Image 1 (tube, each protein chain N blue to C red):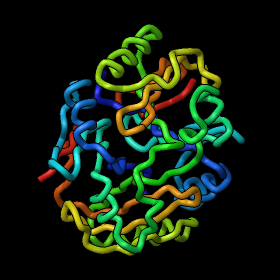
Image 2 (cartoon, rainbow over the protein chains, first blue to last red):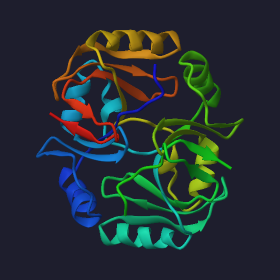
Image 3 (cartoon, chains in turn cyan, brown):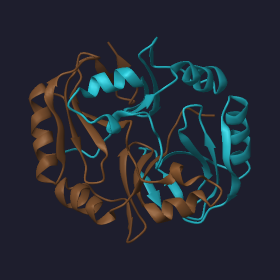
Length: 147
Length: 147
């Protein structure tokens, strides 16, 4: 199995909130937006973030999959967005708040990894970490390394 | 805010199971492996999948974040891995089962999106969708489109 993810998909209770936050608030461009069903945003080369209406998400998984596995809940997971400068952490967090996000943890030095970071929750409860991570490097081909 | 995710991080109850499944079973190469703390795998250009020990994940989020937001639980989320041929769906699913995964839904035509797919759960409860998705296209620059 190749070491690759192509879709990260969240079961979502409020697709309109996704539109307001990501499209209208953060000015992201949907790759595909099917009303009442799903919205996709490309968030890395070859990779897409999807918000799937919770009832449709359950239907897609099928009746044999236990309900607790497809109920919308984003606990125990974070999506991190790195910024190139320590001062940009607060700037991006403020933009997310202006778009309808809620600060969970103000920007601070992190407990792990030597980053400066803060956490903002999106309207569906998904936790974003905004981080300045001096040890994180990406070469021209997109290959990540840590120093 | 740029339309980009750099880290997808799961709170994880069993880091050893991550090693056995992804590294030993699926032959993935860790980008960084800190015993008792975190394991990273690069899964797209500029993007990394992390499994973070659940106690450390909670510590990283901090005391002010409610416990229900950092408890390890991957419900309501899928990671999808696309394969180029319909017949490869079962092949990859079998490889995941041999590595310690559990089939949630055998390969079948999907309810949405015109794919042929099946679902396998990893040892920490994370649901993978293995899919042949004829409408999904990627150009040389990694830009995704749907047809």
